[in-house]
Image (cartoon, rainbow, N blue to C red):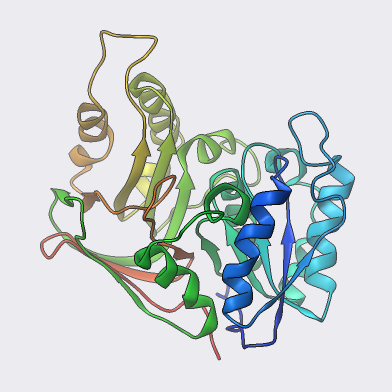
Length: 308
């Protein structure tokens, strides 16, 4: 599959906001919109954005239509998910990926949106963006590191992730290149056995999670192992595992033990500590862009996710 890079946004462009998973908070969206408006962008909210349908933002048909309409709308240059939660696995097999491939645009989100990142990249080759969202992350003051990540949509920007305020640990030394793919571990494991199972052949696999106990992390990594996904990857980037501590099972392996068993012992370059995931500050990274992991220097360098 040929890699497709979306065009960078320009001042005056319109971005569309959708909610393909859970219901976002309207008040938070209105606060976060100011960030993009200050970048010189206009914001268009999709229909049924905050309808609410149980634990979903809207019925499946409305969420599918909102996503496809934004890709088909020539006035919309980028598509941003308002929040995660749950819902994208219900619609992943009903999306018309041909129209996404024919109308490539910036697509942004994370968490439950991992399902769409994986499917879009594998079905179309389009590079998307794994980063914080309006309702769940951007309603309050945004720190400089997070803000810098948001601004990469305005011009092609190569990234170098390096040790910042928190320690970065090399679990297995090495130097390796490959497209950067991955995301939320729960979503990746939920796709195993489906046509949308992640293809990590020759790729750098990044992982993040929130509020899952070590034994559950163990179970999901074992799913990836049994499916051959860990064997296929050339290296691993362990992002933020927020509040992933023992709760139900107080006699527990440490997360470090789990990572060592499944990732470190592979002998492939592996690093832990970059703030990617459910955290603040947070790095925003282009999903599918070519990346270089140098664990000796503790750096992850990623090519620009957009083109002029």
